[in-house]
Length: 453
Ligand code: HEM
Image 1 (cartoon, rainbow, N blue to C red):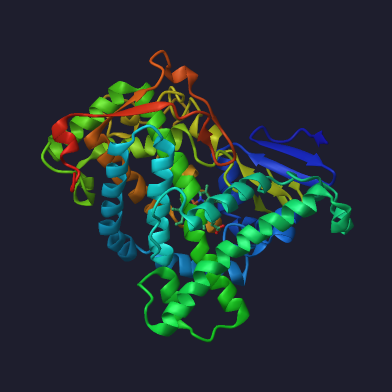
Image 2 (tube, rainbow, N blue to C red; image 1 turned 180 degrees about the vertical axis):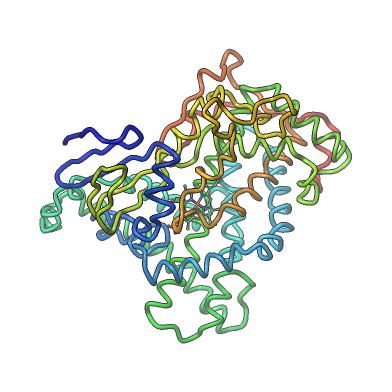
């Protein structure tokens, strides 16, 4: 492995012939990912995940080209603004079910959140109702997600670095082949089971409206390639959306438990705008600037994907006089950019007000004339042609879960001595190391806002 001297805003690591370049400035990202998106919109096809497990056919991982464009068109359809508005009523309903569960047992916050997010994503993709934490479809999807997180890092398995190892036969009992077989089985079940059921329902005229049902109905004699794209795109709604939105929700709970003053200000805004006699809904959103700023701060404070997902260069590039060869994996260090103290003063503090309109006397530019506190979603949702297609659905889900939780519950730390300095996050999809917060009803009146209680 070697490192070499390169422009200060990129780090070039090379190991066993594989080049990885980490981009740590806005300029590097603009130059290498945004402007040159045509040559950096590919994904690295890591042998283990891509080839052996089969991720190479899915939206997040497939190479750039006709298949990706087709995926993209379908994703735009299910996530179009008009479709997102149609999901609002369902999201409000699912949030009420979540409040019910939380009011009965407020201990396992992460489990309640998983269930809420899975129920929203599966309703959109398959009109499938997730019942409880033992739901078979949710378990399958979570397993596939765990497998993905394990294998998504280039080089996670030795056979990625030494492709010759792929020829070691399975009967030798070698670990990576056994793992691959298990992961592939889970992934194929997730891709096929629910889709095949909906196909039968469409034939019998009993399918409920959903994204998958619309894909099956529009083309009842698809080619194998078309059908494969339909299946992978419908799975992408859950696979792209669940773990990521969950990570952001977990950051919200952690932030509220260690920044009580932020929680109280957000609650006060809710009381001013919505009042204590009803639950907040989507129609209140334009009138809640502090909550909106809080969503931005959640995405900045603990970016869900600190290094995003890897891109791959398809041709040689020169960046500030420095040669970067084709095949290089590009990683955007979004975390560094969202914690740059020259751009986001006091970057480790959770301060939603940094995104509110400042007074005339407050500076908007730093001494280098760079804009202070720009919208973090520029980095949080990735870049160019591979940018996240689910951004607005994610923000809707975060908004409704946040406002309704705050309207009914108070969030506090399990351990009262815990402060913001004790909070730690880890992972390529970044989760807090522990989610030790407790929820208690704000008041009897607040709990009585939950319909049906
Ligand atoms: C807070 C929630 C979310 C965050 C922070 C997030 C972030 C990201 C990031 C950083 C990428 C990589 C972009 C790149 O490589 O440049 C990505 C890709 C992707 N996201 Fe999201 N995401 C979220 C929610 C969602 C949701 C709700 C969906 C689907 C409904 C979704 C679907 C996808 C897909 C399909 C890709 C792959 C895009 C491609 O390669 O063409 N994401 N997301």
